[in-house]
Length: 113
Length: 115
View 1 (cartoon, chains in turn green, blue):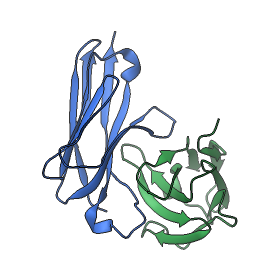
View 2 (cartoon, chains in turn brown, cyan):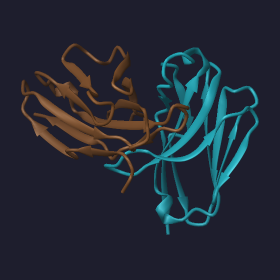
View 3 (cartoon, one colour):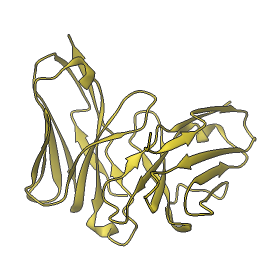
């Protein structure tokens, strides 16, 4: 399968713990995006990488959130000191340099108890 | 980001019926995309539109980029049970032309199809 993959698919954690998610984009795609989706809403943009450079962050990305894409391939999203409000589906998408058609992974469902 | 308004919020139809849903914005968009999302999965791209007035089909799906560039619609003909899911419109507003093309999404239209 050459689509976007994300791991883990589900994560349950206790409030205050740190969690890390991984995204593997489509191999020839330079652009990688992280989104967050809560129940009844569409995905909301968090951050964007072009190759290894993080070029944009939204206001939703608090200082407890950090994302990396060290070699311009896979990316990780870490949430420190998780809060119950962080419970959501975290989606990763990738696209080529045109930036037009974003292809999404299956998401990581985070539940913070 | 710019708010996209999708309607209807939900639809409950019988198999074989045609479906129409739309998406509007208060600002101009460069690109309109339509996605379908199944429970517990990520959105799957259905159709992408790039020019005002463009009409594009993908099987039983047809979508159009509005002339004003502030709206788009998606039609599904002869619906089948596997069309069940949430349909999202998304787009790149012109105001974000230098932003790396982060997508703005609507809240979705939930479609239920009975056999």
